[in-house]
Amino acid sequence: MLENVRIILIGTSHPGNIGSVARAMKTMALSNLALVYPKCAIDEKSLALSAGASDVLNDHKVFSTLEEAVAECGLVIGASARQRTHDWPMLNPREVGDKVVQEASMYPVALVFGRENSGLTNDELQKCHFHVFIPANPDYSSLNLAMAVQILSYEVRMSFLNEIKPQVIQKQYPLAHEIEDMFKHLEEMLIETHFIRVNHPGHVMQKLRRFFAHARPETIELRMWRGIFTNIQKSIISATVEGTE
Image 1 (tube, rainbow, N blue to C red):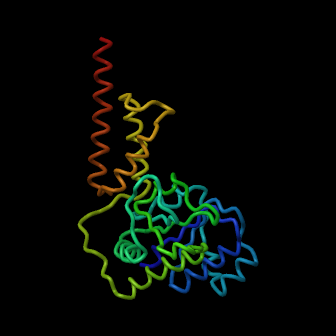
Image 2: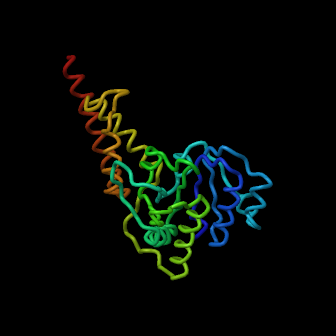
Image 3: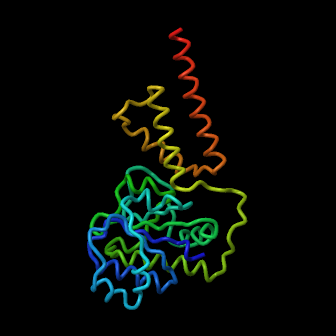
């Protein structure tokens, strides 16, 4: 089950940090490391700071976009070091551990970490089902990348060792790429109905992403929404044809 827990680092700029993250992962029995457009290559410093976790480094995967890295994941949680303008479903580190263990038996899950100096962008955070905020000392919240990975990896391991049984869930959640396909379909339909303008979507799509993140539709519900969008589009085409006759 722990092999299904993917640690994703975005835009990492220091090779030593990648090695330190590998070490933090291996101490908690995690091994699935993914890098999204890294700004540096794994080198001797990475290997040195991995302190024996070279197998994690050797097996890492590289992706050009976050969307590709989480495409087959059913649960995506983004680590955020600060509160954002738009509210989003939040978890604390302990809740992250429980949720990851509960769902990783069903499909891959991802914990996403951003750049050393700026974290995750709002757009990247919007591709996550939940955000997690580590409640460090507000007077000195200087957590580096490996520390943040260590904390969340520890919570995952503790939940695993506490033998939290995978939920016998009748619910089935869509994978990340299915969610993105739905948003593309939704935007297409909103453009066709003139609810939003091409190239000027404003904050509508951002708010809709937040709405669906809060709702977290099941697979069957997502298919229902896709059916609604398709029927609306068919109605538009039918009305257009009748109007030209």
